[in-house]
Image (tube, rainbow, N blue to C red):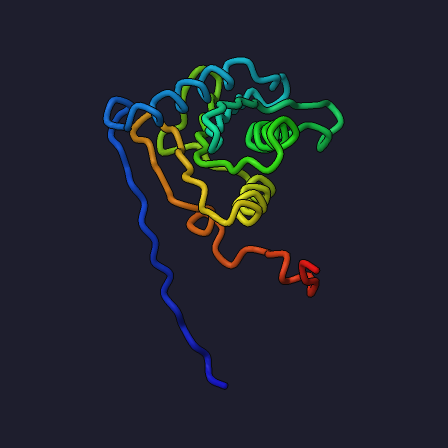
Length: 166
């Protein structure tokens, strides 16, 4: 077999300002920013907030929680998703917004979830069978993607474990 090259393509929507977003997305960004302001981040100073819109209309927020004994803390995205799942099991996540503050400043481009958070978002997508719209906050623009595969191509899936649902 000879080397083969493939090209990955995906669509990303970039909004120049908060006001350009649909109303529900603006609300999610504002909730994520509020959550970031409440984050417990005394070691890194990097405050992250996440907000989640569930299919039933419920809104959930979470923020990062650091701990002196790394890696005992938890990211904002996983805090929000785990809480949503524990409070509303079987309810799909429709949209997630992520905001980050380094000191008091938003990142220039956009907030980026870590690899562990990307994998957890993927799991919740798989559970619901529908892509999660992900809104990434930034000071110069807000980036929106439809589904985790844009942020995590070639991701690990339960099928990779060689187990079936039955």
